[in-house]
Length: 239
Ligand SMILES: [Zn+2]
Image 1 (tube, protein in one colour):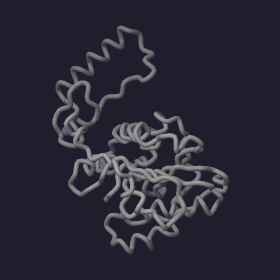
Image 2 (cartoon, helix red, strand yellow; image 1 turned 180 degrees about the vertical axis):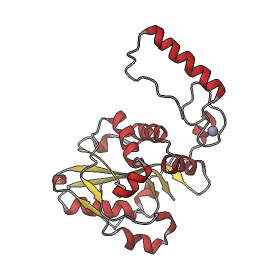
Image 3 (cartoon, protein in one colour; image 1 turned 90 degrees about the vertical axis):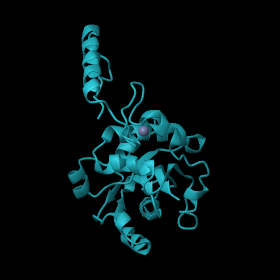
């Protein structure tokens, strides 16, 4: 994990120099490695080495994402940054942010989402709603990776994050272990939206899209409580 640098840069210059030298020294002994290929990162690289970065499968044609929602629920836009497939490098990134406590990577990827996915279509949006984890799961993991993605995104696009508008009322089993049909029946009643969503235009954000059932269930709750427009956004989408 990279060492945190004081973001406000408030230390006196000599101390900054000492911190920088110390970090150089530490990275000589424990170099940060690429989250995809585990080779040592160069000084200018963050989390992902340049060759892995270039090879990441960015989704150009977003209709593969839209097809997951078409006819299921009214929505405005649906976009995802990367194509997700078992054993591809995007799976490594997702594993890092979900199971390996790499919270800084989640923030970093969220920033990328903000830069690449937010355009004029979201000009009059009120904010971002990350898909909530059940309280017990969040306590166990210590964080919600979708919330961290939203935080990174918010840093680059300026939209606020709302974490209190939607709650997960039932702890479900890991979605990826379930059959396609079971997934649809499983998520139907697990989300509950707050009255405050009335009149709001919101981006629902998830880490990985498989069937889209989770986002549809979230959107249903928000629309039922009076949200006027929903868009879907994800770090990665299975094709
Ligand atoms: Zn790499």
